[in-house]
Image (cartoon, rainbow, N blue to C red; front, top):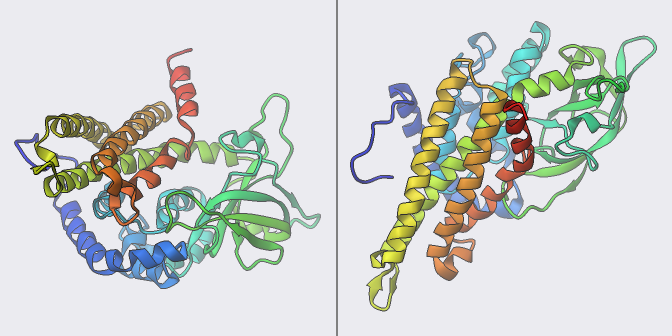
Amino acid sequence: MQRGRQVRRTVFNEDHEAFRSTIRDFIEKEVVPAYPEWEKAGHPPREFYNRLGELGVFGIEIPEEYGGAGETSFKFSAVIMEETARAGVSFGSSGVHTGLVQPYLLAYATEEQKQRWLPKFVTGEMMTAIAMTEPGTGSDLAGIATTAKLSADGTHYVLNGAKTFITGGALADMVLVVARTSPATPENRRAGLSILAVAAHAEGFSVGRKLEKIGLRTSDTAELSFVDVKVPAEDLLGEEGKGFYYLAHNLPQERLSISFGAYAQASAAVQFALAYTKERTVFGKEVASFQNTKFVLADCAADVRAMQAVVDQALEAHDAGEYTAADAAADKLFCTETANRVIDKCLQLHGGYGYMLEYPIARLYTDNRVTRIYGGTSEVMKTIIAKSLGL
């Protein structure tokens, strides 16, 4: 909501707003003009990620000793989500690099691993991805079948298996691969999973099909294959067998990111619809002048306001270390389902032009749809919420 009297938003401070100004200017000058070409290619050019590194985007939460800024707040990432949605663009698969992989490296990498990986992570010289999903395993991570067996001399693991729907997988230089290092037990299906950092140039590691998606067209998504890939033992992340615990620990932030992104997309959709309906005339009148248009946009604006309250509270709770798995599930369910309805209504107000890819509302519509699937489906979120209620 851009007009009228509003409750002052307090979640962002002057530093966040200065960062917002920098990001907004960068998007207008360097992303928007090139975006159609990125969509055709299926990803930004590799040097774009180096450019994000130069801009400091990859180092915000990385400690200063590894070349980062040492910030501990997730709010800077939230600013990027708002600004990319506002312009109807994305930064390719960079969100996986900083939003998904980074927390694992900061929390579980050894000092030696951090010295090796983080400086290149910050500059964009080493782009990363994480490989969990398999052809037969989606939300049920305990069903992972990819195996990693430690060699007899203990120097390396031998990795075999396949992964799919891996965002950033086609261009990544290093992939965190979730694999089974020991069999599951009847008492605990989640036991025996570990995370290995696998170099993209490793023999036996290959990128398969680059998957064609209905949305997120500038984010490369691929199938990965591992055939007898030798992974040095020193590239095990954290402790062997603790992989499922690590994944569960990071899921609240991943789901917060999805919730915030969905809210940002819905907020942008309302602004696109406002602008379009004021410009477009039907029967000699602005589309915005019809009561139906006003009521639809009023409903959408109210929904966006509610989502903003939810995600702002979530940001504060996350920064305070008080954000729970149940909180994240409820927020993701509410924000993604609500955003889906809002964006659909805003597309409808565009009429036939809303179906044309040259209009950013069409891009938001297809980009947003996956938010109800990845990071755990809406159905899985309901299961988590129900469990938190003691059901």
